[in-house]
Image 1: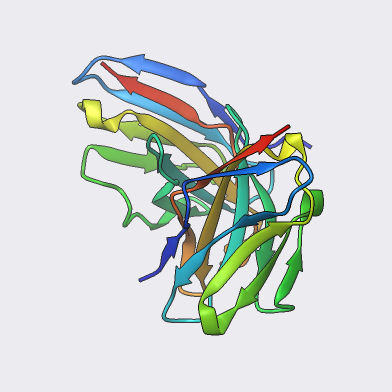
Image 2: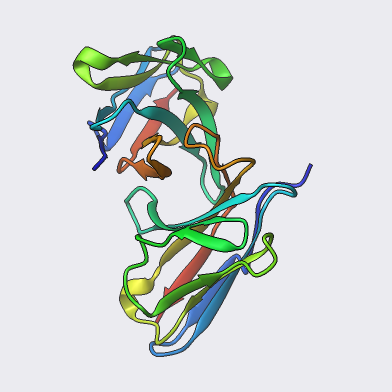
Length: 113
Length: 115
């Protein structure tokens, strides 16, 4: 069975500050890991994904995430927050045996002026 | 190109009624998924189609929920005898191939409210 834990249901940062959203996963087999962003009244949009190639993954809008097997983590970072980054972020996991995504409970990011 | 579309965007119904939610996937995508997102939670898997057949329906909560994809494109999620606990946003996603590493493209969802 797979699971995802997102630490911090709400994160606030100042505009221009580092964004760090935490994700830890549990999987009995090598995982595929995803970060999605959800803006109000919109569908989920893929930011980036890890599929067993490079452990540092770069995504859209300046976001990146690093797969750390030893820590079972896949934290999302962005060096400098923009007001437009305010949204809800979801980490998700799948593997070769389970095509469906298992999501974390989400982190609401607020960017303060 | 067009993304995943879902209709209606909002549905309000009374307890005990029957509802149908429709999903139009991206053209050519063979895999289609349904998820349910309750307030303050991440999406939860309901059912996955590969072509016309339900390859995995292990997420359907009970036998009041049923989904079809008769021609391998449009899918309908059907809920019988709705209950207030069924209120949620129902999300549909599609992907080009049924590989676990494939990106799933999500629609905007149908917000179901059961009074």
